[in-house]
Length: 119
Length: 115
Figure (spheres, helix red, strand yellow):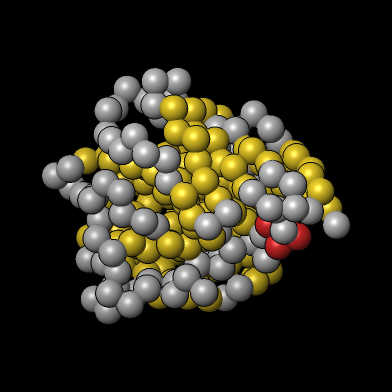
Protein backbone atom coordinates (compact mmCIF):
# COMPACT_ATOMS: atom_id res chain seq x y z
CA UNK A 1 0.00 0.00 0.00
CA UNK A 2 1.14 3.49 -0.74
CA UNK A 3 2.01 5.57 2.29
CA UNK A 4 3.11 9.15 2.64
CA UNK A 5 5.12 10.28 5.64
CA UNK A 6 5.73 13.82 6.79
CA UNK A 7 8.13 13.64 9.67
CA UNK A 8 7.85 17.24 10.83
CA UNK A 9 4.52 17.88 12.59
CA UNK A 10 5.36 21.55 13.12
CA UNK A 11 7.87 24.09 11.89
CA UNK A 12 8.39 27.76 12.55
CA UNK A 13 10.61 30.28 10.75
CA UNK A 14 11.05 34.01 10.48
CA UNK A 15 9.63 35.97 7.60
CA UNK A 16 11.95 36.07 4.54
CA UNK A 17 13.77 32.91 5.58
CA UNK A 18 13.90 29.73 3.51
CA UNK A 19 12.23 26.63 4.86
CA UNK A 20 12.17 23.02 3.68
CA UNK A 21 9.37 20.60 4.45
CA UNK A 22 10.12 16.89 4.21
CA UNK A 23 8.06 14.14 2.67
CA UNK A 24 8.81 10.51 1.95
CA UNK A 25 6.55 7.99 0.28
CA UNK A 26 6.44 4.32 -0.35
CA UNK A 27 5.36 2.81 -3.66
CA UNK A 28 6.28 0.02 -6.03
CA UNK A 29 4.94 1.88 -9.04
CA UNK A 30 7.28 3.48 -11.56
CA UNK A 31 5.00 6.21 -12.87
CA UNK A 32 3.15 8.42 -10.47
CA UNK A 33 2.53 12.02 -9.50
CA UNK A 34 3.26 13.88 -6.30
CA UNK A 35 1.65 17.03 -5.01
CA UNK A 36 1.96 19.58 -2.24
CA UNK A 37 -1.21 21.23 -1.00
CA UNK A 38 -1.49 23.99 1.58
CA UNK A 39 -4.36 24.46 3.97
CA UNK A 40 -4.41 27.95 5.53
CA UNK A 41 -6.60 28.79 8.53
CA UNK A 42 -9.52 29.20 6.14
CA UNK A 43 -9.23 25.40 5.73
CA UNK A 44 -9.39 25.44 1.94
CA UNK A 45 -7.03 22.98 0.24
CA UNK A 46 -4.89 24.86 -2.25
CA UNK A 47 -2.58 23.23 -4.76
CA UNK A 48 0.99 24.46 -4.36
CA UNK A 49 3.00 22.36 -6.78
CA UNK A 50 3.03 19.01 -8.58
CA UNK A 51 5.78 16.70 -9.79
CA UNK A 52 5.68 13.98 -12.42
CA UNK A 53 7.80 11.01 -11.41
CA UNK A 54 9.14 10.40 -14.89
CA UNK A 55 10.56 13.92 -15.07
CA UNK A 56 13.97 14.36 -13.50
CA UNK A 57 13.67 18.13 -13.43
CA UNK A 58 12.36 19.46 -10.15
CA UNK A 59 9.13 21.43 -10.38
CA UNK A 60 9.15 25.13 -9.52
CA UNK A 61 6.33 27.61 -8.94
CA UNK A 62 7.59 31.07 -8.08
CA UNK A 63 8.95 30.86 -4.50
CA UNK A 64 8.04 27.19 -4.19
CA UNK A 65 10.25 24.40 -5.46
CA UNK A 66 10.66 20.72 -4.81
CA UNK A 67 13.61 18.42 -4.39
CA UNK A 68 12.44 15.15 -5.91
CA UNK A 69 14.71 12.18 -5.22
CA UNK A 70 13.02 9.22 -6.90
CA UNK A 71 15.45 6.55 -5.75
CA UNK A 72 15.18 7.73 -2.18
CA UNK A 73 11.40 8.23 -2.53
CA UNK A 74 11.74 11.71 -1.15
CA UNK A 75 9.77 14.79 -2.17
CA UNK A 76 10.60 17.88 -0.12
CA UNK A 77 9.13 21.35 -0.56
CA UNK A 78 11.30 24.45 -0.33
CA UNK A 79 9.73 27.82 0.30
CA UNK A 80 12.04 30.73 -0.41
CA UNK A 81 11.62 34.25 0.95
CA UNK A 82 8.81 33.04 3.19
CA UNK A 83 5.86 35.37 3.75
CA UNK A 84 3.29 35.66 6.51
CA UNK A 85 0.68 34.37 4.08
CA UNK A 86 2.57 31.10 3.81
CA UNK A 87 1.43 30.20 7.31
CA UNK A 88 -0.62 27.04 6.80
CA UNK A 89 -0.76 23.30 7.10
CA UNK A 90 1.13 21.69 4.25
CA UNK A 91 0.19 18.27 2.93
CA UNK A 92 2.26 16.04 0.72
CA UNK A 93 0.15 13.76 -1.48
CA UNK A 94 0.71 10.80 -3.77
CA UNK A 95 -1.63 10.16 -6.66
CA UNK A 96 -2.56 6.54 -7.03
CA UNK A 97 -4.19 5.19 -10.15
CA UNK A 98 -6.55 2.52 -8.90
CA UNK A 99 -7.70 1.18 -12.22
CA UNK A 100 -6.85 2.19 -15.76
CA UNK A 101 -9.97 0.50 -17.09
CA UNK A 102 -12.28 2.04 -14.52
CA UNK A 103 -10.59 5.41 -14.59
CA UNK A 104 -10.27 5.38 -10.84
CA UNK A 105 -7.71 7.35 -8.90
CA UNK A 106 -7.19 8.92 -5.52
CA UNK A 107 -4.80 11.09 -3.60
CA UNK A 108 -3.08 9.61 -0.56
CA UNK A 109 -2.12 12.31 1.91
CA UNK A 110 0.53 12.57 4.59
CA UNK A 111 -0.37 13.78 8.05
CA UNK A 112 0.72 17.32 7.32
CA UNK A 113 3.26 19.84 8.60
CA UNK A 114 2.01 22.94 10.38
CA UNK A 115 4.18 25.83 9.21
CA UNK A 116 4.19 29.16 11.00
CA UNK A 117 5.89 32.21 9.53
CA UNK A 118 6.76 34.73 12.23
CA UNK A 119 7.08 38.47 11.57
CA UNK B 1 -11.10 30.35 -5.70
CA UNK B 2 -10.77 26.81 -7.04
CA UNK B 3 -14.12 26.87 -8.82
CA UNK B 4 -15.46 23.95 -6.77
CA UNK B 5 -18.52 25.00 -4.78
CA UNK B 6 -19.74 23.24 -1.67
CA UNK B 7 -22.84 23.84 0.41
CA UNK B 8 -23.51 24.20 3.24
CA UNK B 9 -20.26 25.58 4.66
CA UNK B 10 -21.23 24.74 8.20
CA UNK B 11 -23.81 22.33 9.59
CA UNK B 12 -24.69 21.32 13.12
CA UNK B 13 -26.97 18.36 13.62
CA UNK B 14 -27.90 15.78 16.23
CA UNK B 15 -26.86 12.16 16.47
CA UNK B 16 -29.06 9.82 14.48
CA UNK B 17 -29.95 12.46 11.92
CA UNK B 18 -29.30 12.52 8.19
CA UNK B 19 -27.66 15.30 6.19
CA UNK B 20 -26.85 15.97 2.55
CA UNK B 21 -23.76 17.81 1.40
CA UNK B 22 -23.77 19.31 -2.06
CA UNK B 23 -20.95 19.94 -4.50
CA UNK B 24 -20.68 21.66 -7.86
CA UNK B 25 -17.44 20.82 -9.65
CA UNK B 26 -15.38 23.22 -11.71
CA UNK B 27 -16.97 24.01 -15.03
CA UNK B 28 -16.26 21.17 -17.42
CA UNK B 29 -14.78 18.80 -14.85
CA UNK B 30 -16.18 15.29 -15.11
CA UNK B 31 -14.70 13.71 -11.99
CA UNK B 32 -15.85 14.42 -8.47
CA UNK B 33 -14.17 13.17 -5.32
CA UNK B 34 -15.22 13.26 -1.69
CA UNK B 35 -12.71 13.39 1.15
CA UNK B 36 -13.16 13.48 4.91
CA UNK B 37 -10.77 15.38 7.15
CA UNK B 38 -10.89 14.61 10.84
CA UNK B 39 -8.39 15.28 13.60
CA UNK B 40 -7.60 11.63 14.28
CA UNK B 41 -7.79 10.20 10.75
CA UNK B 42 -6.35 13.00 8.67
CA UNK B 43 -7.51 13.30 5.06
CA UNK B 44 -9.30 10.17 3.91
CA UNK B 45 -10.59 9.40 0.44
CA UNK B 46 -14.24 8.43 0.44
CA UNK B 47 -15.41 8.01 -3.14
CA UNK B 48 -14.91 9.10 -6.75
CA UNK B 49 -17.47 9.61 -9.50
CA UNK B 50 -16.78 10.14 -13.16
CA UNK B 51 -19.48 11.46 -15.45
CA UNK B 52 -22.24 10.08 -13.27
CA UNK B 53 -20.74 6.69 -12.54
CA UNK B 54 -18.98 5.50 -9.43
CA UNK B 55 -15.31 4.86 -10.13
CA UNK B 56 -13.60 4.21 -6.83
CA UNK B 57 -14.50 3.67 -3.21
CA UNK B 58 -12.28 4.37 -0.28
CA UNK B 59 -13.00 4.39 3.42
CA UNK B 60 -16.65 5.22 3.05
CA UNK B 61 -19.00 3.89 5.71
CA UNK B 62 -22.15 2.01 4.74
CA UNK B 63 -24.16 4.79 6.40
CA UNK B 64 -22.76 7.17 3.79
CA UNK B 65 -23.70 7.29 0.14
CA UNK B 66 -23.05 9.58 -2.78
CA UNK B 67 -24.17 10.19 -6.30
CA UNK B 68 -23.32 12.36 -9.27
CA UNK B 69 -26.16 13.79 -11.30
CA UNK B 70 -26.42 14.38 -15.07
CA UNK B 71 -25.48 18.04 -14.58
CA UNK B 72 -22.32 16.71 -12.84
CA UNK B 73 -23.07 18.09 -9.41
CA UNK B 74 -22.68 15.59 -6.60
CA UNK B 75 -24.26 14.94 -3.24
CA UNK B 76 -22.88 13.09 -0.23
CA UNK B 77 -25.54 11.68 2.06
CA UNK B 78 -24.63 10.92 5.66
CA UNK B 79 -27.19 9.05 7.74
CA UNK B 80 -27.55 7.73 11.30
CA UNK B 81 -24.96 10.29 12.27
CA UNK B 82 -22.61 9.62 15.15
CA UNK B 83 -20.38 11.99 17.10
CA UNK B 84 -17.37 10.54 15.31
CA UNK B 85 -18.73 11.72 11.97
CA UNK B 86 -17.92 15.29 12.91
CA UNK B 87 -15.37 16.39 10.33
CA UNK B 88 -14.61 18.63 7.41
CA UNK B 89 -15.91 17.09 4.21
CA UNK B 90 -14.22 18.13 1.02
CA UNK B 91 -15.45 17.83 -2.48
CA UNK B 92 -12.89 17.99 -5.25
CA UNK B 93 -12.95 17.77 -9.00
CA UNK B 94 -10.66 17.08 -11.91
CA UNK B 95 -11.05 17.49 -15.62
CA UNK B 96 -11.01 13.87 -16.56
CA UNK B 97 -10.68 10.86 -14.37
CA UNK B 98 -8.22 8.06 -14.27
CA UNK B 99 -5.74 10.08 -16.25
CA UNK B 100 -2.73 9.85 -14.01
CA UNK B 101 -1.61 13.30 -13.15
CA UNK B 102 -4.96 15.01 -13.33
CA UNK B 103 -4.77 17.91 -10.95
CA UNK B 104 -7.47 17.65 -8.33
CA UNK B 105 -8.99 20.93 -7.14
CA UNK B 106 -10.70 21.16 -3.79
CA UNK B 107 -13.68 23.12 -2.60
CA UNK B 108 -13.73 25.02 0.68
CA UNK B 109 -15.29 22.12 2.53
CA UNK B 110 -18.44 21.52 4.55
CA UNK B 111 -17.84 21.53 8.27
CA UNK B 112 -20.17 19.03 9.95
CA UNK B 113 -20.62 18.99 13.69
CA UNK B 114 -22.68 16.21 15.23
CA UNK B 115 -23.90 16.90 18.77
